[in-house]
Length: 288
Image (cartoon, rainbow, N blue to C red; front, top):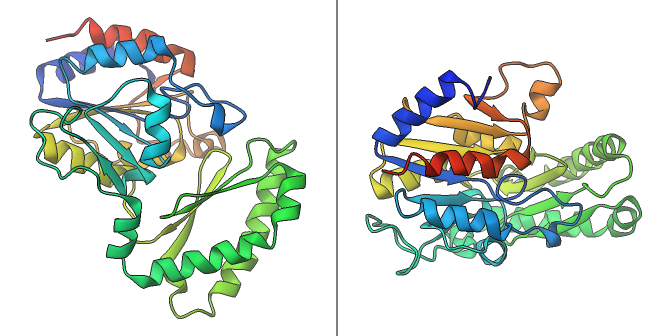
C-alpha cells in the first residue's frame, strides 16, 4: 500500500478528476480527529470549509457508524449524502441532496429494523438485556455501551489496558452469544470488531460497501474516492470499481498490523489524521 503523495497517487487522482466520481469519507478518525470521549468528536471548521468547497465540484458523502442525528451535529457542513449506522440510515434533503439524486431522503434506522422483520429486533432486545448485567463491570473498566436502535456498539477506547479489555470482552460476548443460541432467531444478529469498538448488528444490515454502492448508483458515479481509518471502512474499499481510490488514514488496519498484509483493500495511505486537510487541499487543486 503506497503513500498517497507519490507518482501513483498523482496518476490515480488525475483519473478521479476526469471521471464521474463521488467523494466519500468516514467521520471519526478521518474528518474528525480521534478523541478519548466520542461525545467530544467534531469536524474542525477548517476541515468543514474545505469539504464545502469540494461540494461545488463533486457529490460528497459521509458514511459513518454513528446515527445520522448524532453525526449531523458534528460535521459543521451539510454533505450531499449522510449515511449513518453504516448505511442503514440514508439522509439527503432538498437543500443537501446532490442535484442528480433520486434517493428517498430520511430513511431511518427504525424503518430498516422494521423491514428486517421481528427477528433482529428480538435478538437485539435480548442482547441489551444481557449487556445490562455487565453494567457495573463495564463502568469499572471504562467500557461504554451505545444503543443506536438498529445496532449496539460497545466502546472501550477509554479502557486503561485496551488489549486485556478486548480479550475480556471477547470472552463475555462469546458466553452471551452462546446463551442467545438457545433463541430461535439468534442468528439474526452478528458481532463485528472495529478500532476499540464492538458492533452487534442485524445480519441483514448494510455495511459501508453497500452504502457506497447505493450512493454511486444514486448520483450516477462510475468511480469513487473512499477515505477511512477503521476496519469497517474495508467493506467500502473492497467494492471500489476500477479507476477508484481507497485511502486509509493512519496506515494499515489492525489486521495488517498483526501480520496479514492482504487485510486492506485500500490503494493508498495517509500517515495520520493530520494529513487529511493537506489531502483535501490537493483535491481542491483538481477542481473541474
